[in-house]
Length: 400
Image (cartoon, rainbow, N blue to C red; front, side, top):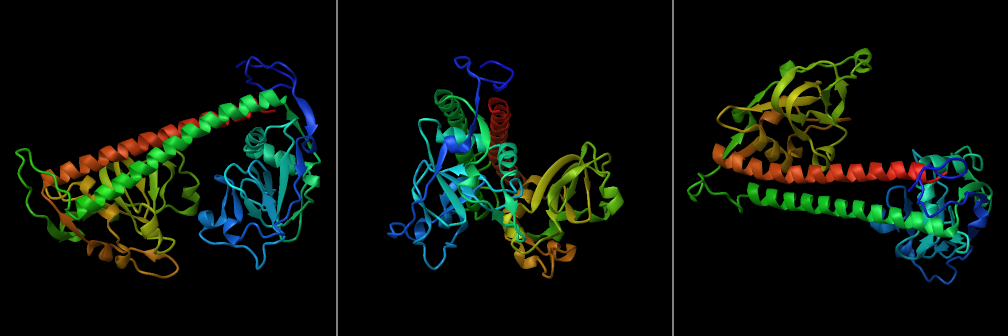
């Protein structure tokens, strides 16, 4: 690849040297007007368009069908068609443009569907072009008029009215092929991370139900686990926490983590803890927050904690902080959470939470084993983020 100037991208494959042409989107796409009048597709085959996942089955994506009483006027979407959603998203206030890569289906009349003119365009290249929010917003902003209810006032044909810079089809296909390889790598890494998370979940169930036990260095069974309440095996350091007022909250830019109920909120030029601690959310949006997201964190080092997070430390020679962390993550504690406009776990109720405590030696083996899985998960997530950042940087430099 080489760097070029003018009406050429910053980064380019060296075998291509022609200037890119400024073409109307109507040169690349044609409106697809086929409707589901023969009811070939039913409500189970309605598609949705996701900014992250692309075009997916609505029921699989959202858990239910949002189709109207009749779907006979819905647009038919074949594999290889381009779909424009006339719905605002946070990053794309004028909608998004995606390629159907998976399975044919139907979309409501709120969507526009287009066929790719293969003599002039590669559908995958068009999707990669519009995968950049800046490209999508820049193209659609002059065309779309918004109504009083934030609805899109634009005809399907008028979507194709403006121009973009486009290379020859051969270069489009080369670029699309390159990014497809990157996408496959990211997909493989995400699958690996998901498998590791499933494995960890299964192992934790076996470990904490004691169907899977470690043995000591001599191959003998460890002692029986003992049921203890947190107040018996933990120290609570909540009295050391420091709340922030609104003016102080604007100044939390710095080098030490600032922990709140929603995990790290920012960084502050100060710290109040410099040890290994377990952080447990004191309040959250609702009860499901305590089930669906990690409510606990294990942290070692300098940090600052606000008054929405409990700070726990295992009693020395009784409970390892690492084992305490995994015990809390594994346990459903919603029975100890009080309701209202915000779900809340008070210090008193938190101390009533029972956990099973093995010997320190077995705690160490369990914590080390689960930590090793977490390290693999974290390394995989780092690889995902690096590959996504690499892809984004290339997208920004390989398109005009």
